[in-house]
Amino acid sequence: MNHFTIKSKYELKKLMKLAISTGETLLKNGAEAYRVEDTMERICNSRDNIFNVNSFVTQTGIFLTFEYENESYVDFKRVRNVTINLKRISEVNKFSRKFVCTNLSLDDGLKIMENINNMKVYSKMHKAISGAASAAFFTLMFGGNFRDFLSSFIVSYIVILILNVTNEFKLTFFIDNFLGAFLASIFAAISVEIGLGANLDKIIIGSIMYLVPGVAITNAIRDTMSGDSLSGLSKGMEAIFSALAIAFGVGVVLSVYMGGIF
Image 1 (cartoon, rainbow, N blue to C red):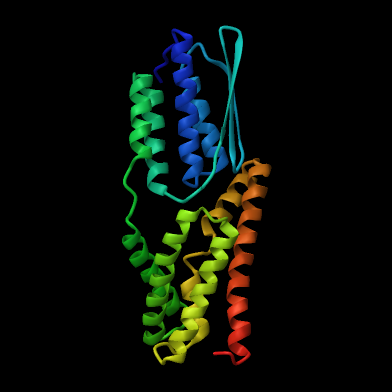
Image 2 (cartoon, rainbow, N blue to C red; image 1 turned 180 degrees about the horizontal axis):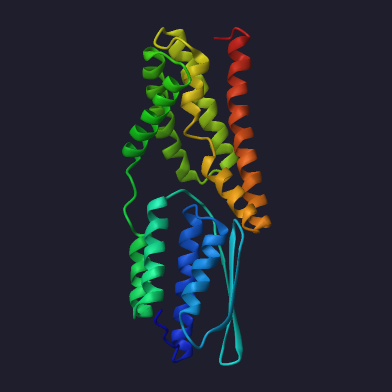
């Protein structure tokens, strides 16, 4: 492995900025806490005259500290609006390996990170169609028929389009999941009432799969197993409350529907 040195405090600030930017990008796009910490530490340790590198990552914040010329330097970054984008995580992983193993300048590294953060994401229409198709096939997997498949596709498509709009208002994840499950249940009930769908339960199950916090649950378990108990606990609680929000959204509609309002 090649190693290089920091020649001035100006370069030091760039290194700190690069490491924090890398960690923020990973965390905001759904990476595990231990992956974020390891990546930042590797970036800083790639410089020979940087010592005692330590990082601490939670679900909502990043801490980084190291020593340079017998002085300690500390930085902190608050992280909000976490989403899931595995493509960005993969690109950051590639970049970090390249930065550590090659003579890549700090300026070039910052430009690469800027490009990664500005990567085009899938369009709202693309997300809606893909999410609806996934929901429809889940409906089939849980025993639904073709009518249920079609209903689940239409219901999920509409719900995802609506959620794409409500995301602009920066709602909390609890309200977002509750609203999604609530709308999915209402539209599923309507589809059954008009004769499009056959099995209400199968349609609802498929339609809410888009909302299920599978990545959050997986990351919570992986962080806990790797020793990051605080991050694992926070992600686990987020996953639990997301599941409760989905259950409440479905439960409200079903209680009204079973009561004969529809």
